[in-house]
Length: 207
Image (cartoon, rainbow, N blue to C red):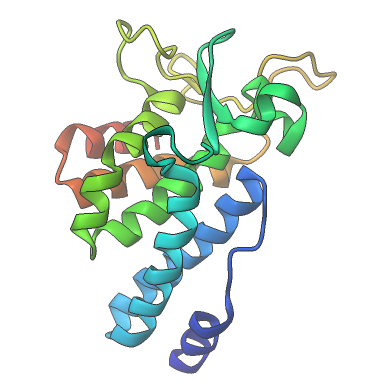
């Protein structure tokens, strides 16, 4: 296990350009960081977290608008989408139509929690952006005018829906239970990293 961890820590990179592909890759690095912590592999953990910080910053930090922002706010429907999806809503599995967003952003939140538990300075700097992603997919507030409450979660049915703002012959669908659970787990982990009990409880409730 240690040998496999060290090999993966040395070789795994974030190469995807879209939010879903990037999310899966940073999510994998986040998992490696947590495994390294459990095994006491400090060098592997530091290597992975350095790569994670660079990859997440590329999406979460636009230097006060001085650099291109990878995320933008969709004023038509109210939500955060990758900037390219404003022009091409079908990009990255329809994320511009607010499809599957808890899958995409759940990986980001999980990875950020894995990084932030050991790098509180980084976490403090990125907390506003991360909480915006949380609010986008799972706002617990009915009074937040930026986002609908619990965008993907159906409290009556007790589970999530993945489909966004377009018709589907399959109707509403969940599509990937594991990725929905990963999103809510990511919210809870982020709450643990931030020592935010309300965030922990939100993640646990949705899961």
